[in-house]
Image 1 (tube, rainbow, N blue to C red):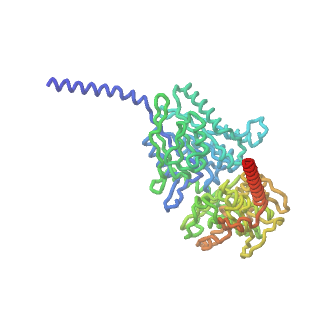
Image 2: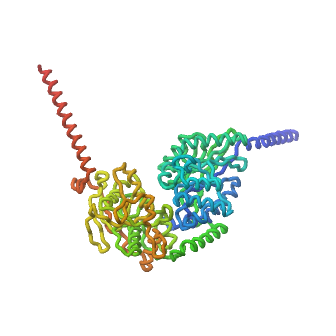
Image 3: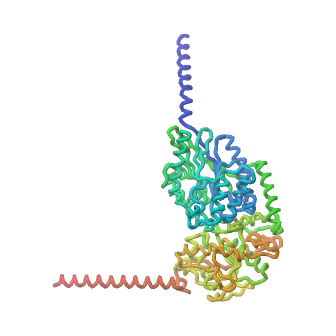
Length: 636
């Protein structure tokens, strides 16, 4: 009996000692949870995916966020920017700030600016920030460390700069914030990347070096956190820079900067099923349009070391039940958009335009290679048709670009919202159509942009109505097009005359993009938009060439497509079931194909090749003579 008592006493002592050590271990490590999204692009509603299911929708996203916060009550919720521009809700960007207000209702702690937050220009962004504050609704913090207006006293400082500074101050935009949850302190800061800046040419902002800025912020914020709270923070960068094929700007950022624990990597719409780990930094991405909620779980050791314990992308699809509160709020916003915006065009949010039985390419397929696209053909045909109908005159050519095609058109019923989602981009406003003139020479250059600049700038892949052309991928760069003709509405073909002026319609975004091609082509290709008298039009003057309807409303890309579809009497025109040969892309090494309609670039290459061949021949002859002399000396 005594033996059993002694054994029991020993067991109880061991258990008691074990329980004494448990609190110490709990204090040594703490769990941190980060929930994240990015590139939401105003996708408040679910959308159809390529497999016939659905993805996204803020009401479903809210359900998953709530589930995660039940599991992890101290989780933070952040976003990597481009929260706007991409659906009909964006039309209330400057007047209602729908995106920021609903993110506030969903409990987002912080976000940052993406390049598309600048699409409505500085005045639009400033208005959105002020409206968000004045609404009285909760809104997320905005952090932005390296993409800000010029300072007062700098040469580039303007009235727009002052307006933006006032709006940023009114909202409370900061370089970084320090946030505490469950005993964990977080430093959250925002960054803009170089490519993101390129895609916001009219932002009015100045880009400071992301890596230099990040290191300064990390050092400053970490020191502040230690001084105020006596602990090392978890440092999270909301970076609108992106990754590509496992590398990219955010990879370089992590490599260059010490002390960032997590980079929420936005802009490139990347989905990372596993984090990229570099320099003790975890780079994470959850894809675009609210397709997934990202969950990062970290173990924070007492010595400040941060280690990843779990990472998950939770799909937001049709199997997720909608949160009733957010679903009701989205419906209220839909009614607001219909009343304040769509009513001007005589359309409604869910208005069915026709039934579509043609399976169009996905956006990734459209952009994935150089080819003729039925979706691109449809869009450019719609623009040409709409402007001819509006102005009562023949338009020679219409053009759209890869960069402005955001979604495809679904099978089955196509409604107004579907079309807007596919053609929503604009500068200063959503997708306005402009009517300008190009010389025949510049029109041919536009075709060459499609052929030669696409590998350097995929957004420059073009789709045109009113022309027929072909190009050989094996030809000299900037001389790939070997055939080009105008194609009239009745199918007849006409020569494109270099000195003649042609009427061209394009979306504002695509029109301004064509002007930026000069840099991408090393200054060798350029297109000059002109007015009816042949005078050049500056990029910031293109707004004066927006076409307006009889009511004075600007003609929009989405409205042109919607109206064109309505003209089809309920069924998609079978013409768009296949390509019609307006753009032929091929590869050939046949000398005839390589030299047909050669221009100065090909002749220059041939000249260089001829010189090189001549040099090689001379060197060979010189070597032969030297060898011959040596041989003769040996014989002597």
